[in-house]
Image (cartoon, rainbow, N blue to C red; front, side, top):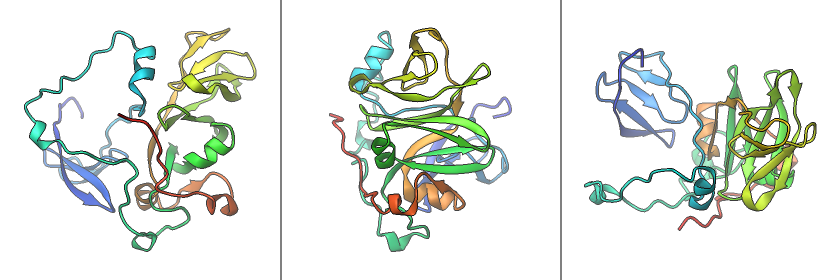
Length: 240
């Protein structure tokens, strides 16, 4: 941050979402969007980087020369099992109950506008949503394998592309305009646009309760009748 390397540790839960402090300045930060809440760096924000939950099989296919963190770190005693999608409370414990508190969703931010895309509604509508947020055409991918997803600008050059699932079993998409094949990381791997990387749009796979508490003005993809069909905890995967 501003040329200074910071080291972080978890300190508390705020609105059900863990917060961090950096050891160098003692500033309090959110992990959901990287904003500083108090301290010497109040008003600063950490850069948002794309980080996607995936399977080891897909990761190896995309990045065959990857390295792996050694399990023998010396801190095994501090590890504990975490169940994704585990309940954190009742709907009545939170302010916004348009969705179940533990419903899994992709939260997207563009120019201080926020929108939630529930996994179940993305899947219902084909696994990818072509939308516009704050006048930016975006594609919201929910990878069939890995139960995760992120959002990208779907503008390449001066053209807004329209995406669809092409091969669900390996998380491959295509665009209708050029027929190029794309990974869930927004990289074109075959076709006229091969080698093109879609621009990442700040987005995160998370649960509704934290997103809604931090972004009370958030929109939600779909209609109120659609939202009533969303359930939670919603995660079903094969992370072994």
